Length: 276
Image 1: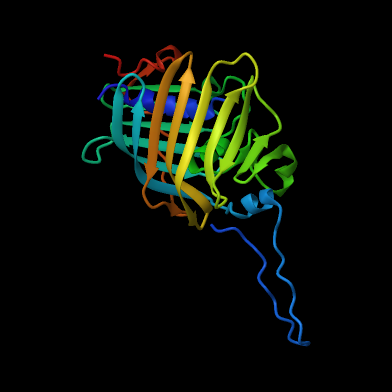
Image 2: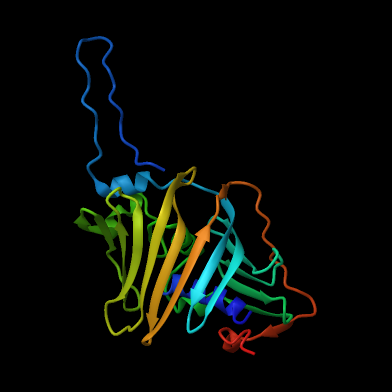
């Protein structure tokens, strides 16, 4: 039962460190004996953008497993409000919540119910000056390509990526941040396969997020299984996150209150929670 809240925060830190494709159908010309030729979208970036639907809220159950020297697994509940909040509730036994993590645009809250303590900090302690947003982290959790600090990949952001490979597709972000570049890899069917975050300068950490079980949903193509690996100062971490069926655009309750009678911990204690 050790390191429960720290694991969720480490998950967020790793993630912040750094539908079906639409095609035009054949249209018969009813006034003549000829038919029009189907219009085929030949731009692979347009195909990716077409696979990304809109959403307002999401909630789901799932499981998390993490290996960072020792192993840990737990059932979780995940709730998100687009561009506003990510809420993760840790429920290792019988559906009872023992801890929670809330990330908003400017704040990070972590509550340890077993030891009656909490953390309330600026979210900047995770981002280290990188212009990552809540929207970016949500896209990482769902397997949606994005431009750091600017949102989900869309028509207006096409100029911010370069197609470095076409079969399978590889999209590289044109800008690097704090010594890191990032690339999105797709499989042969055009669905996202991984996000690679690699050093471009003197940085030493490397990250890879692998996506699988990508399903077409009302919010577009969404990964239901995420496996991430990180090497930080020659130390390896790994976690996996799986979702059950996701409920989109319903009423989502996110508890933003801080507990009464709990002791507050400082940022120094962020990664030492549950160390006893």
